[in-house]
Length: 61
Image 1 (tube, helix red, strand yellow):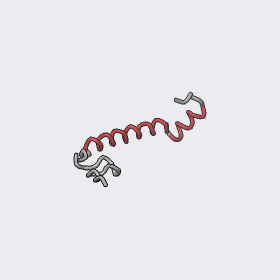
Image 2 (image 1 turned 30 degrees about the horizontal axis):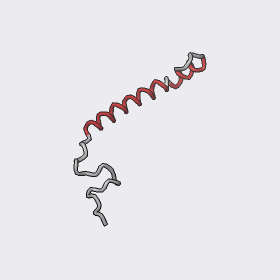
Image 3 (image 1 turned 90 degrees about the horizontal axis):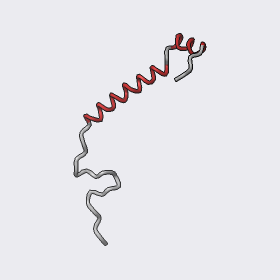
Image 4 (image 1 turned 45 degrees about the vertical axis):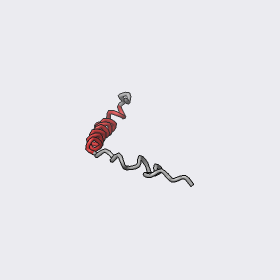
């Protein structure tokens, strides 16, 4: 990602390769979320799709 420079090399030596660490954490979070979403029960068919969908159609006036 970054071109190797003396400044970057020194920062990596002092602080670690932060972009690689962030990428690894993002991948871990992505895996964890995928696992949680697979375990989440599916909504019941009788439940409205969203708060704006009425459960029973309104009657005509």
